[in-house]
Image 1 (tube, rainbow, N blue to C red):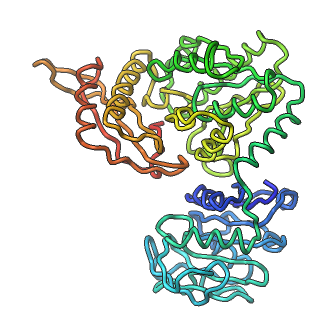
Image 2 (image 1 turned 120 degrees about the vertical axis):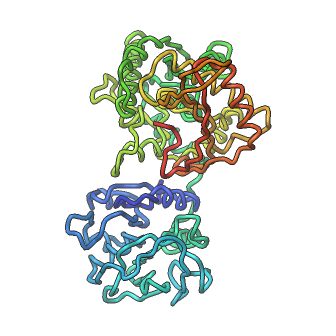
Image 3 (image 1 turned 180 degrees about the vertical axis):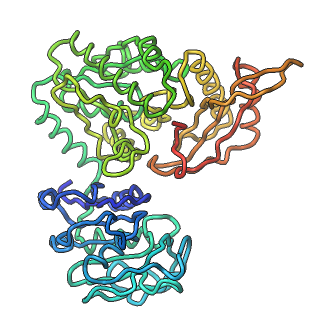
Length: 511
């Protein structure tokens, strides 16, 4: 974290991918809103700035912008799509509505193999998504690439370290894009590329010891990857000052509450102070009548906090609350951008909590980086590669109001689906595979009788960072057998659907 690339967000849908590409270069980066004060940027160990794309037009006075001083901070700047147009607009060039809008693949022809185009073929493929285009570059800039419909597909003023591309180098549809970003952060910005999990574990351990001192920490432990890695990291840093509280809220997968207790509780493989709190009815009562996803998430977030506060009062002298929050939680909960969904441990938190501070040591990491930290800490692969499970549990896999009956249906259907995946030998380590319950009831016929029952949705996606995902192409036989078993074994279901939607446009969970 002593070398940081700042990604200024102008509302671009691919900002998370930019961050992923930078992290893949072993360089630390952070996504910040475009309104971030210059003083905050100057205070950071700043090595470079990337301006994201965005849905607006720089020709609109109400569109997001930044100070011209951003381009004079003494570090290189890369503008992408809207960020490229903004650079041209602020520095005296002109941006106009394009005669021909470009969406999708385009042939990129280099006019100069300099700057970020070092070691890139003279003709390559890029991914375009724009309505405006740069008509005239600012004084001192040179055009470095074009396409058939975009005369300024890239520009640079190398003497000032300013670079801009109209296309999206961060997406897989730009095959040489990762190389361009690597050239920018490693060669142009001069980052050493020493961002790795061993250094992260060391620096975070030292920071936790300094931050917590002799205080005691209550960790909300769900048994999932994020909270388990958080527990291991805190245990290394502060030992017996850590108390792990597992809230059995009645929204877990079938048999999971007992499984978590067997792993982390007395006699388990981890030497932790472990408290199991039965709170099923508390959560069911709080969720009664709530059908809107954001409302459910906020209810769950508040109930978690209230349970933790009650347990902390019983234990006595607990100053800190720790959570397994990771970077996608922060991004999707609206940190500087649109709220996609309020994660219970970020946007779902109540305004007032009784703890002195909230400790979130993994807050800057993506999911695959969290797994790497777990391996660095010596956690077993069975835990590091465990299927992720949302903090709000099955409440976000049940569309509409949550009831004990709906939870039973999802638990049983999900257990069957996972059994069939395991029986077929399908690797579920690089994704998320689960059953959910739609709010749709439809007519069916079973045993010559009419039924009016729920539709279960099977969801299987492949992803490494959980910011983007694509539907898994499961064998039809596995889906068919899962359907047969769910229909025959789960009371209240007469239809099974398979969700083929990627992320984006959907999210991984149904809510």
